[in-house]
Amino acid sequence: MMLKFAVKFLIIVLILQATSAIVPADAKKAAEQAEKAAVVFEEIMSAPDNNIPLTAIDRALCIAVFPKVIKGGFIFGGRYGRGVASCRTNSGWSGPAFFTLGGGSFGLQIGGQATDFVFLFMNEEGLSSLLKNSFELGGEASAAAGPLGREAGASTDLYLNSKILSYSRSKGVFAGLELKGAVIAQDDSEMEAVYGSSDAASILKGAKPTPASVAVYPKKLFQYSKKRITK
Image 1 (cartoon, rainbow, N blue to C red):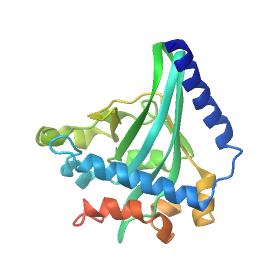
Image 2 (cartoon, rainbow, N blue to C red):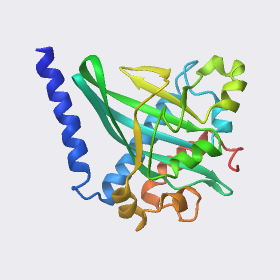
Image 3 (cartoon, helix red, strand yellow):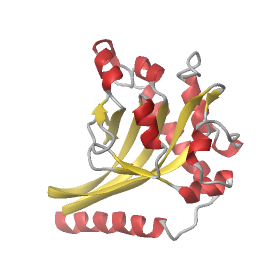
Image 4 (spheres, rainbow, N blue to C red):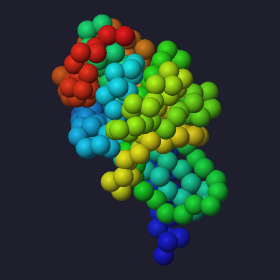
């Protein structure tokens, strides 16, 4: 029974990866993705004593949220999901750029689950990774487990030395996570649908106005960084 369940999850992951390149995105789906990311971020930040510290939000140059990334497998495994990222600009948080998160794995594993991921890009090196067409977490871009709530006071070195702080929420449990092997790639089709351009750099640098349909995500980030809207 567990084997059948795991195989089904793996098939779903592979189908999502295969079809994402051939099924055109539309502005409505992109708006839904921005809304989901805003909801996940609000839920996480509203959790008492177990949220992302505001000191981490203060220092982050960009914040990305990937809701419900599907992971499954039996020995061979994989994960796939979509998300959005916004960066600080001189006038606030940029409009969201759209990304995918995927990757495979090999080893002792069985079953499947959906996980929310949050990434804080803490410095220019982390930001430069986000501006590439794709990059691998734990490879060219190291991702450290982010501190939670009351851990913030002892995390100065972590903030200074980390390119990316990463978090995950699965089955209601939210925690810092040192994620390796996942590949984050720009979703050109989603950005074309919303902005008429796939230039993530211009979007994240605030060179393009934020369409009202996807403004919910940067507005949510602004709620937790009202006094910290410039680099």
